[in-house]
Image (cartoon, rainbow, N blue to C red; front, top):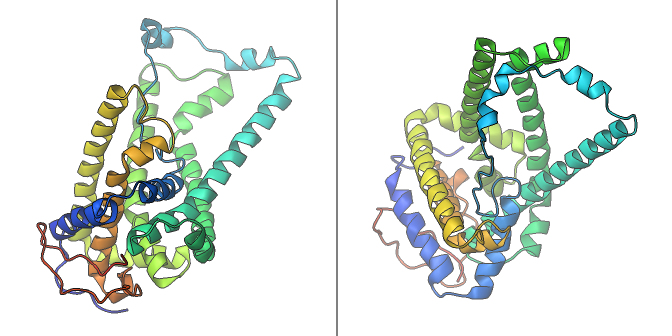
Amino acid sequence: MNETRGKIEIFAPFGAALDLTKLILFQPFDIMKWLVIGFAAFLANLGGGGGGGFNLKRRFASGDWNWRSTSHDFTSTSSDLPGWVWPLIIIGVLLLVAIVIALVWVSSRGKFVFTDCVVRNRAAIVEPWKAFRREGNSYFLFSLIVGLVLIVVFGIAGAPLWVPLVLSGNLPEGIGFVLGVSVLGIIAVGTAAALSLLCSFIVPIMYRQLCSATTAFRQSIVLIRQHPGPVLLYFLFSLVLWLAFALVACVLTCVTCCIVAIPYVGTVIMLPAYVFFRSYLLLFVRQFGHDYDVWANVVPIEPPTPPETHSGGGELPPLQT
């Protein structure tokens, strides 16, 4: 592995990502290019808010806050169900699992398609879909393993909630319920943050090195151990940016009468944000050295111009036009 090139910056890639986003989407503006890259972003974010909408549809009626005072005997309720209901429930669960797995597979392949669109500044779906088939499938299997690990972790963390349900048919009440939900929430947030940090570099590393997901995951751990400060700052700064993006998406969802919440349509409308976040990640990771520079193997059609320092202090990579 090559050593890191100089100091790891946080704000320099931010400025360069803004310039790169403008270059890809606005210089010049091409509606067909927007639609194709938007579809790539939609594929990459399937199952993870790819529609651009952030709907919180749960409604809390007055009775929702008083449910603890009543006894919920799920055992007796389940025993009253007709026999034909259980096969339908099982089929429904299996169908749901199959749909989720299919979405994860498409999303895994789509992440490399979208990354390729950003790296090469082009609107292409079929070619990168085929070119990164092995890497996409590897990332898919890795995602399934991570999902199973999460199920086990959440199952153990949620034991104070589901064990009483299995033994007595009732959920815990009072302090037991509060503690169970609190522990589960803390573990869920902590696990999600840790996995997001560890897995954020996997796709750029796989795209650059054409390696397996497990190899990229191990390299991500090494990078984080070698540069904990810059990586943590990048993660926290990205989190703030994502929260701002979520707020803007919520406002646009309300203003546009939920048009932004429509799958694919919302992704196209919010495409500058998706391109920016992917550009920011790629430009940040490339600072770790030649082996992590996704533009290292990109040959521009025209000779690259001398690097220019932009508003954020970063340098745009040579891109195809």
